[in-house]
Length: 266
Image 1 (cartoon, helix red, strand yellow):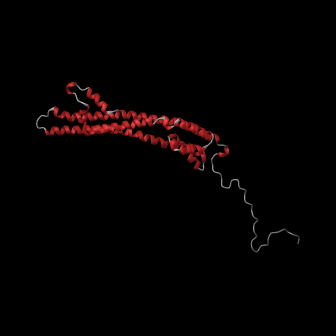
Image 2 (tube, rainbow, N blue to C red):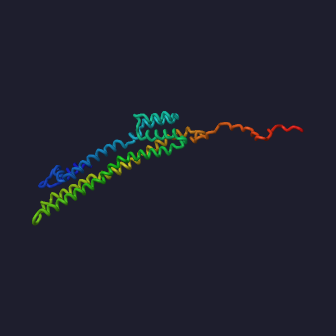
């Protein structure tokens, strides 16, 4: 992964008569090579952080799974929401499940919306995880282009040397520029190839963990579905449901008409 270690191996492979140190290679690559080295150190730190954070023990700890399982098994929805909102319990599991429970509590459809809420919040959390891995993919794309930039700069310097020399050009006068061009290309590839492999590995790891967490959430929400009776489907009741119908008043007689009464014999 590190450009420094790769260049050290390259320096060790050079014959003794033309032995060069690692600093000599870095000096030959000049500004572009230094930029590639800094980029490699940055992406190494990002990869280490991602390998530490993208773990099931951090995204869905066992203690949180057990606590939520007990709360939902006893149908303590309010307690489960408060547990998910606690500052010390922040994780992907609590953000998705807690947010879904809150949305269902505020929705007129109740827990009929639970599955859709879990899917929407889960997609948001997956996008948040993938944004950090996109940094690794971005470096894998930029590093070869930086190497190509160094190659072009080195070739431009070689042609400038040819134009400045009168008469035949000696090969040793062009060796420095050509070496700079080749070294930056090698450095860019040294960074890009491992980053591409690590990027694919992190994406596959996220997909596998999200599948496992989805199974955990499905098992936890099954407690809520078991407590829902046929009369608690979550659909809103009509406003006049359960109220007696109003009594109809007798029709009032029009002005000029005799009031209706019992008919008597003339």
